[in-house]
Length: 108
Length: 120
Image (cartoon, rainbow over all chains, first blue to last red; front, top):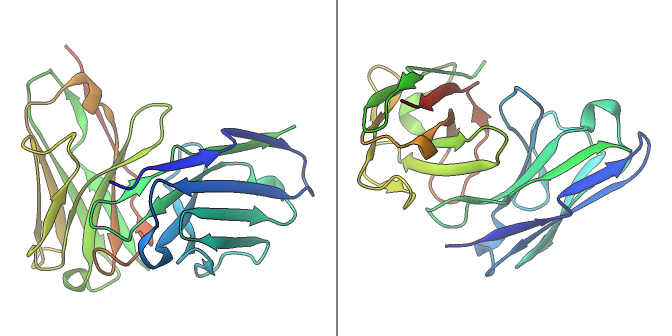
């Protein structure tokens, strides 16, 4: 099983600031099949990034993903009020999907 | 528009059973693999089961293997999760989600979830 860890657990920032979220895998993620999801309270998760760096349809370009192998990063260049949420990474390179524990981006 | 609508959640006693359904519309259901993901109150996301488009391949997390059964009816555009021998730790919101293939594709559309509470 590919175990994913995310850091930090909570990121306290202000609108307009840059957010950098990290996801680390216990082994190399096959073909960098790593996705990022955003979840707001009471809502279902929404796909932001797939393949480590490809934005999903309709996702603003302030969201970007990078990384390969075991280390991945989600960057939000300038936080908008609607970006304060929980972010999860997920690997789909194996048939047994796994999620990271999440990073909460909240208001400073 | 892609729509996934879960139903069948509710309150059930420990040891009981429940069957969840996920009705799909707005896309060719029979082409897509489907997945169940759950989220306990205040906790993170947990993948629990997936089925390929023709149900040729089915996968379960260890936490539900032997107790839960995923199935689908492509003629009815529906996905199911039969949950038996339920435990308190199975209490969660259960989401269905689609992916084009398993593995190799992300979960690109999700339902709004259905709440399962296991309590005496």
